[in-house]
Image (cartoon, rainbow, N blue to C red; front, side, top):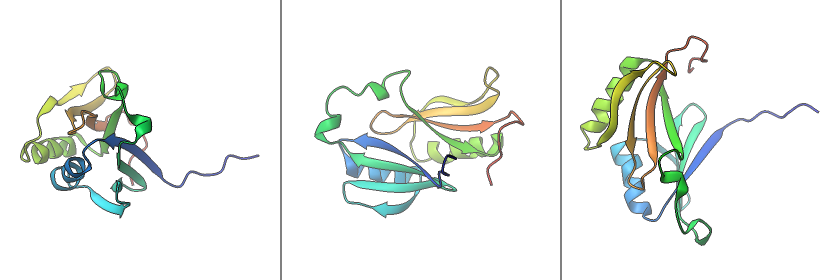
Length: 137
């Protein structure tokens, strides 16, 4: 049997303060909201990729190992190094503090920067420099 296609992708991050997180992703990052489910909102990050922000349920209560160093990283992929720099300027102008400014990472052949959302999730803006990486449409 052949594997069926995957048409879209959604990554969900959890928050204890939906109003704060919704405002960050809508007003600071500027993502397009495509669905409001009350306790969750889903945003288009590009193409058929999406980011969902959800209220924490009893199941997710307790320590948040994904927000510790070495945990989850949500990466926004740009086409060029210049686009990474534009994003850096755009977000810095909205008060976002960066953990790492845009720089070349020779080990992975990428150009990237890092910042955190209000819940402590590590976010990355990156451009792949390796010509083997499939270019965004």
